[in-house]
Amino acid sequence: MDFKLLAEQYKDELLNRVLPFWLEKSQDLTYGGYYSCLTREGEVYDTDKFIWLQGREVWMFAMLYNSLEKKREWLNAAIQGAEFLKKYGHDGNYDFYFSVTREGKPIVYPYNIFSNTFACMAFAQLSKATGSEEYAEIARKTFQRILDRRGNPKGQWCKIVPGTRPMKDFALPMIICNMALEVEDIINDPALIERTIDESVHEIVDVFWQPDLGVILENLSPSGKRLDCFEGRKVNPGHDLEAMWFLMNIGIRRGDKALIDKAVEISLSVIEYGWDKQYGGIFYFMDRCGAPMQELEWDQKLWWVHIESAIAMIKGYQLTGNNKCLEWFEILHNYMWEHFRDNQFPEWFGYLRREGMTLNTSKGGKWKGCFHVPRGLYQIYRILESIAQKDSSD
Image (tube, rainbow, N blue to C red; front, top):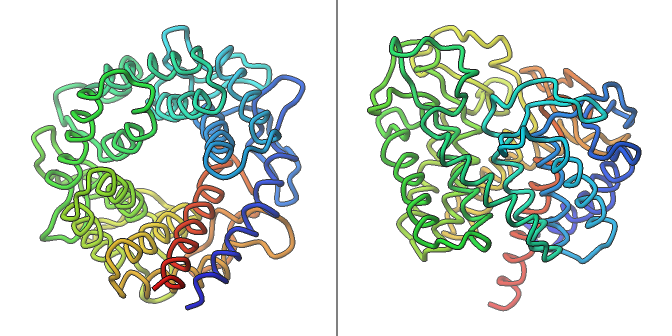
């Protein structure tokens, strides 16, 4: 495998096709913020703004400005989106709405804590880019609201009757462990960051990971017991694999080889479990008992699942030299570039039928925005570049 050539392929896709698409097509320079509902060609087909996607796009351009190149157009794009979020994205208590109109009027209450998490990451990253204490303070207040809401993330907007079947979900510790790394530079409480990371890692590795099944479960009882219901049997392989490269980053930060090895072990187990042996690709949802799924989209192949899995595999290879990780990265690479990349127009398709045919040609919508594809391309290109440089110096 020519790592240097592959690194250039991912870098070129990021800088010359994907980022220009979002810069040119998504910015609302009249009202601020970004459009995410974009056709295959990049035309706006709906003007509602989904706050977690607004936060993700601010984070994306601020992160690239901080980590890759000090391009003014990236910083300007991040600032204008952040100003929209600051003015219209939250309820005044730093609970961020799920969606607003083009002009910024609230549509859906802040029931989804992930609107908070991505806003927190966005303002933290932008504060580093600009030196703005105002942005840093917004990130700190939002971080505290996330910690305050952990025990009851949906709060008054939860539709579940309390007491009958209480559950906790994997998505929260998964996101929080990554978010803690994002904000630690601006949180003036190192002990809080370490405690938050410790709690999240424990939940992922010691509670949600099920060694006998070889997968992570999406939902458990508050005490960590398995539940025999739709939600309790659900497996989301993409979530599992995305979380594993987050854990690898924590392992790097802490010099914890055992944690990195555990993340690689889980990654290889999950991808074997989640891979569609008949048509290729990773299933969106699975049932740990093999029962019929309630989500009709369970067998679709989604963009984010595959690119996050590819990050986990190439990072696992980089950190451990495990050739199984490299083999899986090559499989994922070939699948993604054949099925998700649009050879005619920029950006990637998001949704495939089980057999690998394009299901939806849009480049963005309520769930897909300027995040997984560019972040994945960036992560993979930098990892491949690092491997190539190491190989050339050996």
